[in-house]
Length: 222
Length: 310
Image (tube, rainbow over all chains, first blue to last red; front, side, top):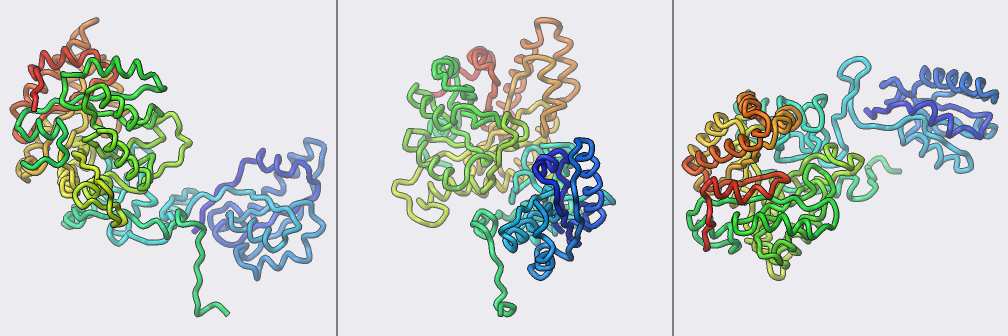
């Protein structure tokens, strides 16, 4: 899923400093699963903003709403009759949400309340880790299901580099060296020869480097 | 390994069977050409080629290609270093052509320290190619006369291709295989990470020799003399993939006040002496980090002078 972190309160307060009536829109997709932008977090942010603005003596009126998904026009449409009376709308979805909202309602102002961080999953309650870089051409079958594009700090296809020490990446003892894990798994299973093969330069056209991407499924397009 | 691939001095020295001795020079944090030339003077005539580092430790410095060309003008032979962190394949290929046009004949292909170590940790990194792919690219440009996209090169760059190897990084069991992979990709010579743990290096070289790697590539052992106990402790604790045994730190500490640097040099000279007789070792790469002024003395005491004329 897409993982995100809530922006610092001060940054959100700065974005809305000129407004007195706003709406906060949550999303029941990924950001609900990673506990950052679902209806619960919408409520918490609304209360926190109201308290902060009351302290400043500039009360804030806030409407709360959470859509099924913000990355789908069908659900984005549900806001069409309620947006007009608000100065601005804060989206708590990933970076896709405020953009889909802006495109559908170009006359309104939409503000992001979260920083979208990566594609990943939860390894324990409250901890999410990156697993995919969305490069558009998956290569993890070469690496026993482990992705060096997303998980090696240098995206090496022929690792590990000389900075791998004790199973950790050179950038931090908090970061596992994915190449150490790849090599050890191959060694344990007697398949080290698979790593002796040279992996050629990657074609980054399918990644963001090739420009903004689009996926069209002809059978679904009406 | 008889035919010359680049005609560089380093290649000729190695192929003539001499024990090679290479040095290193970090470009300045600025455009101070005079200071750079002062450092060149300590190296000239005392080494076969000089590695010109490329924004080492991810700290911005004068471009390695520019310092390399200055070196050519001063009559020294550079070993132009290129890291994958700061360039995509277009920049890599154009820089390779550029340095060759300016008289550079050796190139060392590296991944590069992550920018988090450096003075611009906010930078976007590139890593379009990795060091293995860069080696293969330099070889393709030289031997096939083609760019990565298979287009022909009008006057291919004939470079002597180098790679790095760190026998002390993990997983140890894979390190010699990664070296073999670099040789298969096209490395003509290899310079190792700074060696301090001699036992582990002997073990590494035994495996490399058993695999016959020394017959397919020239392996130069990396030596960096310790200047102080603090430097040894820093390298031991703070530099990932560096193996500094406690016994060496104790030895340096035991040298006493004012004598630590001399003890560091003594250890380096003992190492060089052993490398001269170590099977599979074709030379030494001396990385006297910001200590170029001591290179003439170290070369003299290590009995590697005069350097062969080939």
